[in-house]
Image (cartoon, rainbow, N blue to C red; front, top):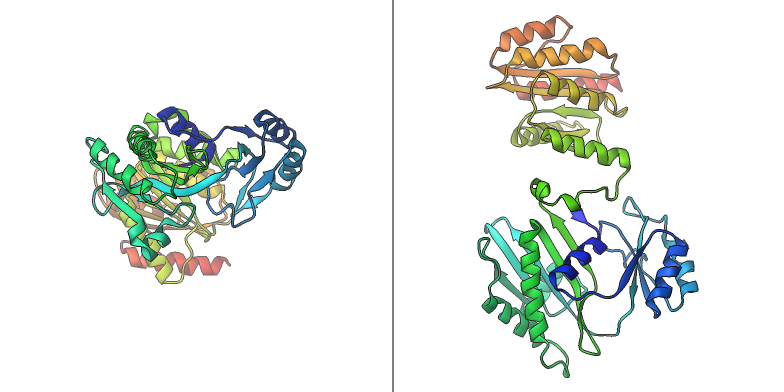
Length: 384
């Protein structure tokens, strides 16, 4: 789960990382008041979950509160890669001597977090690492003990060595910021945390000018203060929370064939088979609640999506039972009149009993997964 820049900076500041003075505002007048409180030139930073705001012309600058109000009127309501700007972080403008990069990310291939430090900040870290690997330092961080003082000392010396003359002693705050970053990453169940740029000002301060963070969604129960609506309609947010509470993983896609399955691996396999055969999935729905009530509730999701023309249900029953799941489908289709066709692939525990229940409502279950995908695509074409 990504969080906003202002949230990441609040966490960094509490962890001991210096940040510029700033105020969050939700309207032009609030922006003007925030700029007046700062009492100096300001940067207006729309709060979005996606990057590249500068390249999209979404960063404003103001020397006076009046200019801030005018800039806010142009920024608020803008749409950035599908996300509407509703809040602006009004931040003091600082004089920068150098820009660095400092971040930490889970390296799933290696099985541990990796800290990245780069002497060139404000740029794409991947491009910098590919073009000038000498500017980048990578350090493996122990999941058990975190970044140790010796490692942090190396980070501080490495970054300070790339600074312009006149910044003696900067390696000390850089070392402390590295340690604070790693602690915050661990305490907040981070998947990614970066400061870009980490600025060294002309008067020798080291400040996190921008920050981004992503939290492990499976650990959100440990971070209740960070669970809130971001970048989505209230209805979508409430629905997402309901899915998480049920143990469901639901991702909306652009197609028109709804998919219900249990197990992320088999669900992804269905998506691959469907795309290869020319079908267009409408969603990824992997549900741990594969029982009569769960399958009924999942059908309600499909029923509420007018873009879905066909639903493919994959039932591979082990500890659960085909007849119980078939009852859930029958419950829904008996109660609701739907506008979509239904294809069921059914195999496993109480399979014959389940197929008999489906026949009673006019559905013929299919045993082969590829056959079920092909049938769903065929029926979907007939629905067009």
